[in-house]
Amino acid sequence: MTHPPRPGYSLPSRGAHQGPWATKVGPGKLLEMVRDRVIHRSQIGRRKLDRAATRRRLDEALLELGRRYRLALGAGQVQVPDDLAPAVEEVKSLERRLAAQEQDIADLEEEHPSEKRDR
Image 1 (cartoon, helix red, strand yellow):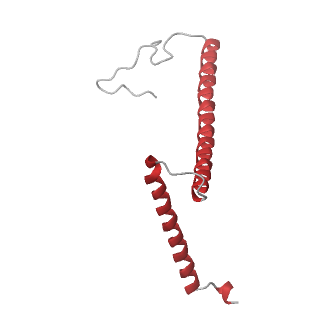
Image 2 (image 1 turned 180 degrees about the horizontal axis):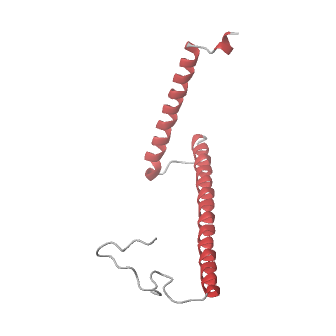
Image 3 (image 1 turned 135 degrees about the vertical axis):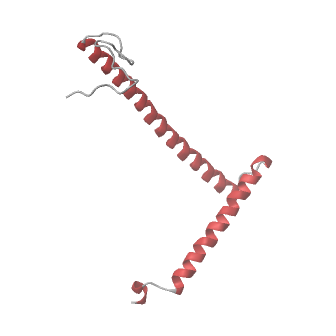
């Protein structure tokens, strides 16, 4: 059972094509077009995955560089350039804050030892 079209709406005429696949193509050509599109999209996806992996490796390398610089700085092997002084101070401040938070946690754990510690 078909319903009549809504007022103000007309059904497309038979054979009318709309959208990106509007040209008349045979099933073989359509399949080829779809396959090409899938391949193209998968190539984009693969390159995005490669980019994400490279970004992770870069982040890890920068983290290691920073760690080594911090160790060299602590050993007095390097001087802090003036433009890096604020960043170094922020790192020191965060290290002090982290140490205080860890001590606070340790103190709280000692106040109420777990049952395993009581045995």
